[in-house]
Length: 432
Image (cartoon, rainbow, N blue to C red; front, side):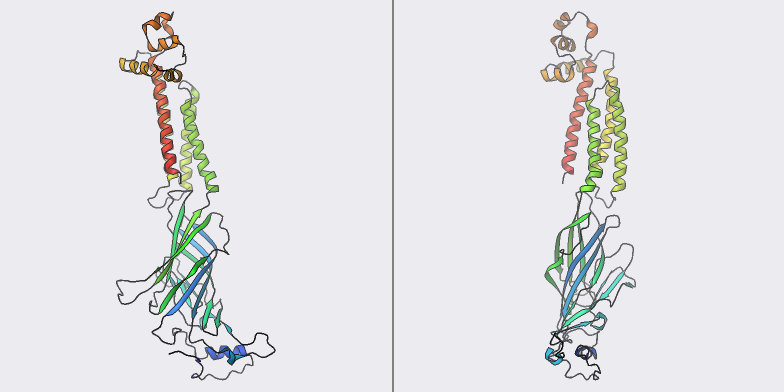
């Protein structure tokens, strides 16, 4: 049953005001029942259109909370609030002509409950935000405290269209994935729906742009990379014959990694350079051990700084922390290998046949002679290989090159190559 003029059958006391605007408001709301759904036929559903106009947002990784400050544009049609503008024509001295719009406090209108179904505020605070015929609250249970109720006005058109644009603060749970820190992106979602009204009574409509970012202020640490929406029919085992539809709004936010890269990536690169510097110096030099010790201390402090800087959430360990951990272990191994190789190089006992054969094979080529012999002349090569002809050339055998010293240099070089390969693999795994 359609109501062309809901005031024909309603007897309201005559208004004493001479203002046309006030007369219209009195006629509309004199017998208005805000507990009744805004439809002429109770079997019809109420279509709710909503849109978020974001102003600002923050993301707290420590508490896993996405906080959004937004204008929420909500509109629906109330068939009990329809009038003919010709019946409420203003005085001629007014320039607005017929009254086609009316402002009203939201508590005077019918209450349609729309809930944020996702948990809000990890500090166990429950919010109820009742504005403009809709309710936003947490579903964690308890008696939510009222933030505001009737502070926002709604606009009512002559065709029954009700439009409200309240200011809303939303805190929603968003567990971070810091695997790629500081080049990480987070996927956060909030679901809007109703547990009070069934889908046969309340129909949530998705507009073309549910979220507008045009009026949003820059965050400085995060930026919204993408927004998507999805509507769920809301079928539950408890209520097979009814539905409770909802709309999920997904935000993909990306970290602005400039400052983070300067504070955590550059120190990591410096630590790697220290490791290669220690491996590049001579085994006999005292500077090598000094650099190794400094490198261990620096990398240990860097790991502690990263563990303090990056919240350890869930089972996804940040790759940067794994990189720093493995780099610290490699720095420790550098100290151990340096001490062992120094002792091998200083051995005075003759090397066994296996070591001597290995050394002779390596320095038999020009590249091996260049890398591992201090004297690359024919005399030096002959002394290192221990060949009979070479020893005849040498006037004294006191200057023969020790096989242990050459063997230590070869192992040290192989260690450097292994470190290069390991760091290359670690870097490729870390690069986004």
